[in-house]
Image 1 (cartoon, rainbow, N blue to C red):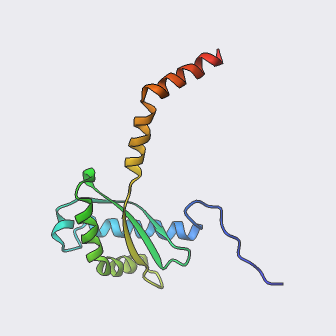
Image 2: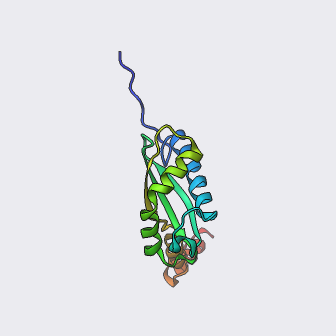
Image 3: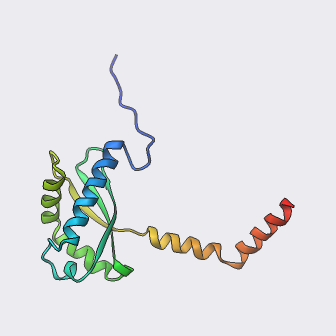
Length: 138
């Protein structure tokens, strides 16, 4: 009787994916913070790396980045893509993986989404509904 692998219910993947993603995040953030990439756009922008998501086979890393202040997102993405081979090689040496994962860069939009939800919660309609709910509980 063959054994079948069960899919994990862990958001973001298996424990191994999460651990390797966090190691990659630290490695890429360190490379960018130390100015290891000789690119004028990356050297003139502070780039944070809030998350790296790994594919199940660990061969693709989606790197979520955000330039400080949310400015210059397009030039930063282009500069990261242009220097992806160097970043891939350098991060793989630091993390010590069998295969260096291919890197894909995306802008982290969680901050924008949180701001949008915060604005929604402050609208008069939501305040009115919350007041009605608290009146009904009494």
